[in-house]
Length: 294
Image (cartoon, rainbow, N blue to C red; front, side):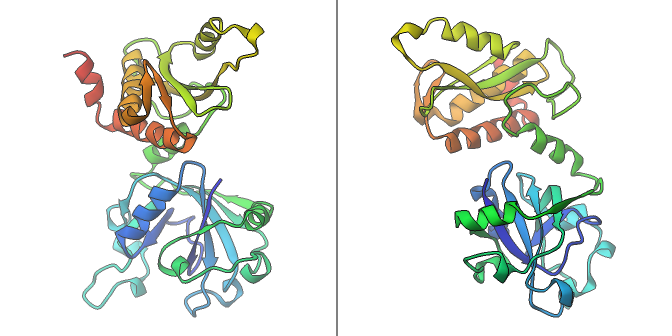
């Protein structure tokens, strides 16, 4: 898990569940570096805008959505602090990412007493990655209280998508995750299998991923001590066409890493990125599914 830190004036996420930034580049950088399950830490500034009790403290953390947003497309001006508008009436933090899950640290510890390496100015306007393993361990060991985020219009589907895109070792319950559409055929799964611990992956789709994996491994002579395929990623889709579309989109995105049939040789981080993008493309574009019928 990666952790990123940004300085804030407080934790108002029970009311407005987004993290805002002044420049689009800061959002783009965060989304480029972060993967699903990674978290952003919120650190109280030392300025007067932050309550004195919260200054210089680790206030909380959150998982985020995976697309850049415009603050004012989601939140009315009346819900924002008047001090965050310039004299011309322009909002100073127009770019945002959604918070899909969030926690408070309770109690909120001082940064200087928690982190071995202190934050730089990068965390003031944008985000700074926490890279020291001891710092990551210290943060993850802090006691937390999960925040109940409000159902802000426009973010519900993103939260469901964020949950659906997590790595999974088994199928999610039928009422969980995000599906492309109401099923027109049997529900199917897009899968990613890994050969042993190598960066060799098999991408495909099936109505029964575990059975498919067993069938593939039947062709590997176990008596020779060879590694086997194991399921590492799976995504429930609403139809066989949708599962096929996601499979094909992943293979397209990783065309330069493809070694034949449905196999690709790449880092897990590269597959994770392609997996996420393919799911989003199928959910929103649906052009890949249509092309199959042409």
